[in-house]
Length: 462
Ligand SMILES: C[S@@+](CC[C@H](N)C(=O)[O-])C[C@H]1O[C@@H](n2cnc3c(N)ncnc32)[C@H](O)[C@@H]1O
Image 1 (spheres, helix red, strand yellow):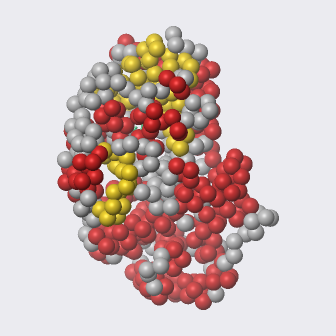
Image 2 (cartoon, rainbow, N blue to C red):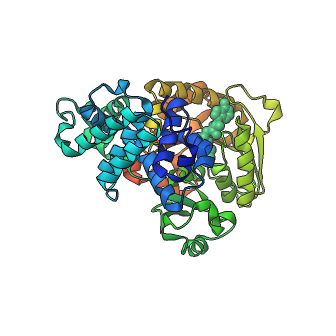
Image 3 (cartoon, rainbow, N blue to C red):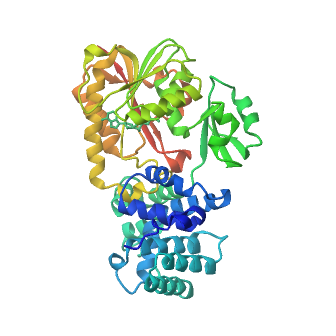
């Protein structure tokens, strides 16, 4: 099989070879992109800062525009896409991405480097194919045309914006072609790096001052106090002194709104039931001014280990961890009843495609319903742990109805002792502009310039 994996020496110094290695790895062993990047990190550690930026742009850009790039390949190839080896197809995608989407790379360099990549895989015939296809695409750009928007609106939008057809179909049904176009455009934008000021360690003006020489700019996020967008950082975030000192966490503004919706008070007891790496656990501790107690649970012990490191870095002293599998009922005798419970549930992640463009192609329509069933089960298992008059927040980074109002409806049907909490009682005023008429928190990339989240807040009444 043609693969660059064996050529690890090149992968260390050539950003295109490194990008190809990651894309090939995803094809061979499907997993979230983050996991593939973590796994291949030792092989890409030698890239210079400049080459690392190009590597990232190639990986993310090629995944983001994959369907569109494949449509261009199909227009110029002398054989069906299925007959092109996956690695050669990735080389073509990387080459075309540079030609079609990157101004600063001369087309000739994009072609030559693609041909070299094919050659380095010892596939001389494939190198000729890559060369001919890319040169044809440059010579006769008119051979590629989008499907007609009037006759085939779904095909047109899917290829023009590079999203799977099933997702475009459901978005057009919900928000029409113009709304879908706007959402796709926002999802295809490179997202900002958003930070959450850690109020346990510094104030917002102090953090802004500390970051002044670390990036070209630092901009407050409209309507979310404590959130900052970092513009073109001058070094990797983990190397910044303010990061090492725990003065901020990296977290999208929409994710910050979820903890604000739960709005725990100092001294309360809080359960963060799917705590992951602790993005919300540490925010909750901040809102509680490090007074009270938080139990952070997850079924992935490796995540809880990293959460504990994050808790230390950010100076949180009230969070403990516990392994739990929410697919099974929890033994109520081994838990206290909590004042507030957060379920930041595993979901399709279709609201964060701008950060995880690989999920465009790994997600399937049937996953959405599958996640909704699991979310309802997790909510069932957590409901008994909420004290009477206590609060439960359910959140997902998805805008899909099954995982939003669908999950809420199922929960309320099965648990008449819970109601949607009256929006007027939501203490934290920051979230009010993001609530809809039913009291649900909703954020949309094309409306709010943040990730797409949904959250509902319930009160236990008996
Ligand atoms: C959306 S992520 C949580 C992100 C986290 N709250 C944060 O803000 O960083 C969902 C989490 O659910 C966890 N999870 C998935 N299945 C689970 C299960 N059966 N029991 C417990 N946790 C589970 C995953 O490991 C993942 O960390």
